[in-house]
Amino acid sequence: MLCGVPRWPLRRQWLLAQVLWLMGVLGSPAQAQTPPLLQFQAVSPSWYVLYGSDETLTESIDGRIANVALVVKSGQALIIGSGVSFQHGQAIVQAAKKITGKRRLSLLLTHAQAEFIMGAAAFERANIAVQMPVAARVRMQERCGVCLQNLTTRYGVKAMQGSRVLARVQAPKPFAKLQFIDHGLNSSAGMSVYDPEDDVHFLAGLYSPARVPELQEASPLLWRQALAGVKAKHLIPGHGPLLHRLDWSYFDHLYQQVEAHLDAGGSLAELLTLADSAAHSGWKNYPLYHRRNLSQWFLKREAESF
Image (cartoon, rainbow, N blue to C red; front, top):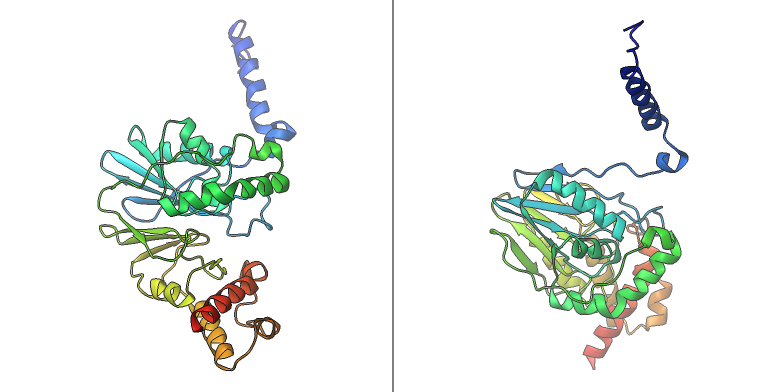
């Protein structure tokens, strides 16, 4: 050996190792733009969370905005949420297997919302059973083809390649002592998941902090009651960081505003001119859903009054 460089043929191997090291450090422009590997973070002895970017789909550059949960109990593991695309789903599976090892995996889709379901094809490709409540499955198959088109328009064909709406999913199956809770709201809220052993509640479509949901046919009063009934040490929202309390003031405001306007004999057009809620106008999705929520709840309550 001369000056730390081995003689041939060992020197040739050493030079090759240096070249490969430089390639790994410098990389190509395409490699430099590759998203970092995903990593679940522990919440409790059995629960892990892969946090999304907590943006809206119109703000995000890749759509990876929703939280994904992983529950590991004895010889099995459950992933809740599949991500926004086939590629995202593949990355979630890869990250989960670093924790689960050879345990049998299954996937639960709690509700029909694009950033939670469009990665499901990657799980199906990996022979992982995909489960979903019946009402949410119907909504997904009726409407989420349009969601996929919108995502493809926004993020591009390459980013969404392989993503599709699944034609077949299974009904949710019992898993350890988890409670799958249908709050009776709508298929966008879907179900939440409570674990009494770890005192963890994954809220999924039921709640995300400072984010206006799409009520559709659901009553804001019932939605508020569902949130008031949530009690757990660890609260994992559909988007955003771990929580210790919930804020249901938006539902109170919307309900009270509509009831007061109906009592005064006002019209929908008049209501919409007074629609702004200063306390919630800065919430995510407020411009997208607030007036729609007011309109739908007003029309439903007006019809009930006849």
